[in-house]
Length: 103
Length: 103
Image 1 (cartoon, one colour):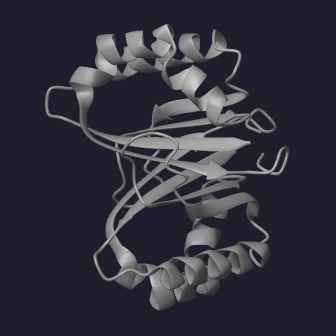
Image 2 (tube, chains in turn purple, red; image 1 turned 30 degrees about the vertical axis):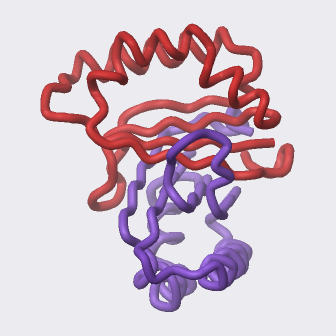
């Protein structure tokens, strides 16, 4: 399985309403993409100093599942409506994980 | 529960041996910190264009568990031996997740 993680720093134009709207849109998107096995998205809890503004984590079966997710019209629509204009910096990584080993 | 994700871009001095040594050290560290419920660390698979060089993801019960992990001598030792000199850029986020909902 693949764990895809992405963290974002926003640019100066982003409002709290943008972030709330984004989170709702991402959760609705994830519910509609069967290749997404697990999904988490939201503002950084800032439990530690520093850090980015927002994070996304998704578990998919394999590279094909990752492409199905990231190339899905619903994901592209979220970029169109929110992320494309909100992102100042993006940092993403994919890691291999064993099924059931990450929970 | 808390999902802690961190991604790193290396500076120019980092070698493949550094990355291998880091991964071994992080896995040994995680095995020795009971507050870490799940852990994944490794080089980015680069299944998609761009992205950072390396990623870490950890699940802990709560903020206290996160502090126990990040302030643990074994974690500080990994920073001392590897991460401190390897990191060019770091991006970290903590997200709330429901127990068992992320696997």
